[in-house]
Structures are given as structure tokens and as C-alpha cells.
Length: 236
Image (cartoon, rainbow, N blue to C red; front, top):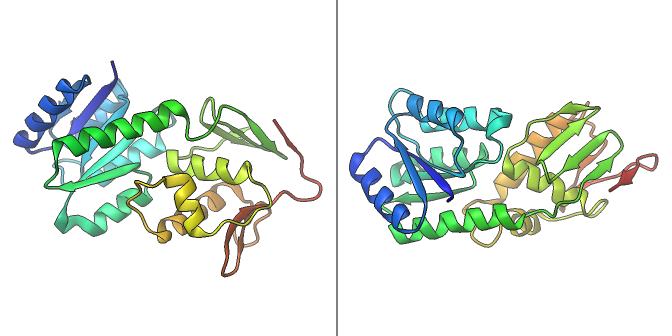
């Protein structure tokens, strides 16, 4: 049974979600503030985290940051609940690595559908289980793990999918719109600005000199690519 953790301070919302998700066949746990939610996450990582942004004790964005910085929580899919007045925070949440968001007020049926879509993406593998090596950079989708010079590089789910997609299509330039379609999918709730944000994050994590990158390059006015140097090796 797939597990969902709800971190939401409105008890009425929690009960509505609990009832809908339980009927849909999920095992549901709930916490009512950010601090206890993060503690529960680390104690028993769920398959999906439904996260409100306006939480007491520890904000939803702070919880999200902690999740994305913890390699043990790398497989947790995060769905943000956001009020209409929190649009800026919602955008920041997606850029921090959340996988989807549902604005308040929401339809329980839609939320269940979104969670199922996230789980299908995880099960079916937005990336196939085939490791790729480019020089000292290794990308292993079976473990969702990136290593550089033998050192583990933590990545969010979106960062990993973007990197893997570019690595499986080396030396090809993709527009921002093409990357949105390939990495985020048709149900995305993000803009082309998100592509820039995630690409630059990967560049800062993987390039010795992000201002003069060796692998993750941009084509001015066109898009982005992963370029394999002439001396680079790519194997799988």
C-alpha cells in the first residue's frame, strides 16, 4: 500500500484529504506543523508528501528545503498545497524541487489524480534504468544517484530527470519548451523560468567553473545541452 504523508495545519483540510486518500487505497499519515512533519518524514519516508506552505513552527518551504537536502528522502514525491495568495511562494516551491502543486481551494478528486500521476511517473520511470557515464560523471537511475569523481552529488527529482534527459541526448540542443515537455510533462504547472533555474543549479553542482562549463552548456537564444568533450567518454 502506497503511503501519503499530509503536513497541513487546517484540521478540516486534513480530514477531507484523509478520507479521500484512504478511499482511494492509500495509507495516510498526517502532521499539523512543519517541525513534526519533518520529524515524521525522517522517521518513515512516505511515497508522496502533501505539503502546505503556510505551516506553524517550520514553514512549508523550509520543510521542502530539508527534504531536498537529505539524500535519504530523495525518492519522496512532493505535492504542494498552496493558497491563491501564495503564488510567489508556490513558484519558489516548484523551483526548490517540488514535483507538483494543487492550489486551494481544491477538488479532492483532482488531488487524488495528481498523486496517482506522480506515483505512475515514479513507478514507470520518467527515466529508464540504464546508467550513463560521461568522464568522471556517473548518472544511475536505478538508484537515482549522481556521482562526480566518486563523490555523491545530491539532486532533486526534477534535477535528476533534467540531467538524465540531457545525458541520454548528448550534444543536442533543446529549447526550454522542449525540456519542459520532456522533463515536467504535459501536466506541468511551471514556466520556462524553471528550466533556467534547474539548469543553473545543476551547473553549480557539477561544473568546476560554472561560468565556463565543460558539460552543461547553453546555446544563446536557443536552449541547453550536455556537451561531451572530444576526450570525454560515455558508456552504459
